[in-house]
Length: 478
Image (cartoon, rainbow, N blue to C red; front, side, top):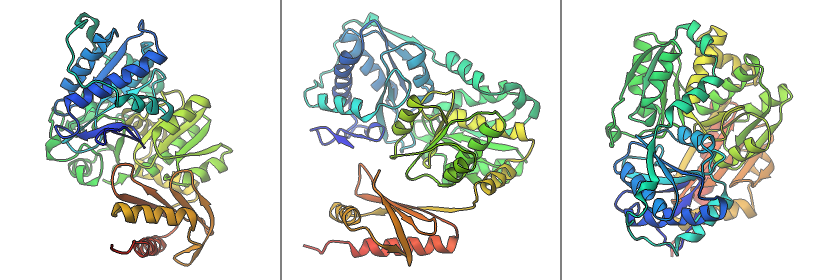
């Protein structure tokens, strides 16, 4: 994480997020926009437009308009989307329109009280640390003054949807999906995909029922995150009406949610494996498999079995996207629900992920639950994954991480540690194949503990052992 001198403006793994009217204010948006503009001056010429988009959140469109006015005032030509827009859509257009990159106003899957801004360079993927560090370095000296309205004629609106859909349809086997005549339930969760997925599914010949498709800045009182507590209605609809598939995305549509025909919510770890297999087996694709340190090693097993390169990165899709720009990547993804594939932009895309699952069902002519079983078996699974979010004091958090880095445990739950990785946090590779990752949150006093093993009992033992070890590292009260 990089932090500006203003303690309330923090850049995490994917831009700056804050609570609206607390730290995410119009003056701070002005400062960050001017800091981004300072970077743009060093990287692009002003004959290339800057794109701006936003998600459905409260004031996101107004924040976007303010940013557009500042950039126009500074001499940039600005194209702002006509309505809220998925992150993968604006990312694709950033490259397609030969732009100087895009500003996306979104807080992704965060609660309604949050908003955020991230800069997407012209290569259509997340900004890498060398870029965000330059932006952050400019924040302190940037003005928070409101825009003057100068050069307002440099601002125009545009629709990024047609070109994105044309590109998406070139990747998918539309006729194959049409032939399957799938029955699909779709929960928009009030997200940006509400203006995309119903149209895409109907174009692909699916019978679609959609819900939660209005703009609601409060996201129905929930969160725009495709996890179990938000998907109860989708699960009920799929099982009750015997649908083939249930689909959802997060708020800005870069993460996916998938429900199989039995009503099971599939984890991102499972979906990455299913789609890696689909791309290779059914579409004849090849390339490296790229995953973050926190993502399942079943992908390693699959890669080894099929002679594919396996690349591990730090957490954050920007690192996966960087690999996609360097080499051919069959699929890249992370346990938090983002993925992209060969031939696509180096940015996570929940809309594409959803449609690739429909395509996999269409190719195989089998229910999704069976495809999951076959993919897991082929990768020598199953495995059991768990994540603990441990809320610690800042002092306790520091003590845990320092201890694990300088004096990592030699065993966990009676299982020897054979190797220690420090690519991102501390990763303990256990001798029988299990692993444990301790990684700090970048923005709160929280340590996340990820684990993967071959039985539920062993998983519980490891979880208990890690919690006890972390409690023992608590500094004495002063």
